[in-house]
Length: 116
Image 1 (cartoon, helix red, strand yellow):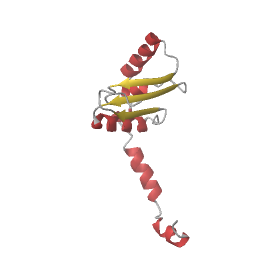
Image 2 (cartoon, helix red, strand yellow):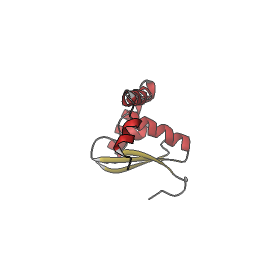
Image 3 (cartoon, helix red, strand yellow):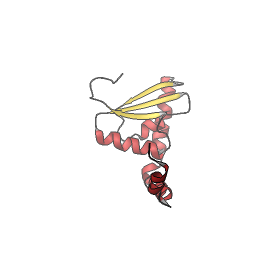
Image 4 (cartoon, helix red, strand yellow):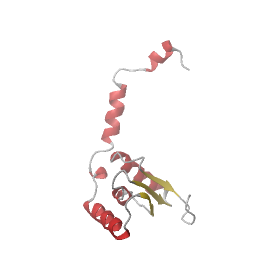
């Protein structure tokens, strides 16, 4: 544990505000907007399959937008899987911007075996 007097030296006025502003700045703009087509497609998938909740696994999740759209409320836990580390990173960033990371997550897998 850091002694109390040393801990105070790490605190800089305005640092938390700057950190928050930087995080918010990365989540603005077109990158974080949900696509109407993804929402419509996700709704159609869920209607056709009759899935009313539970675990939804999206294999080949790409940028994560459809993965995010598959989360239709607290009854759903959605996990996207992709072989590309770049796609996983993009997806995670998108999910964070949409405040969905948690009930919706993304993981990299080898393309052959599901990680369950």
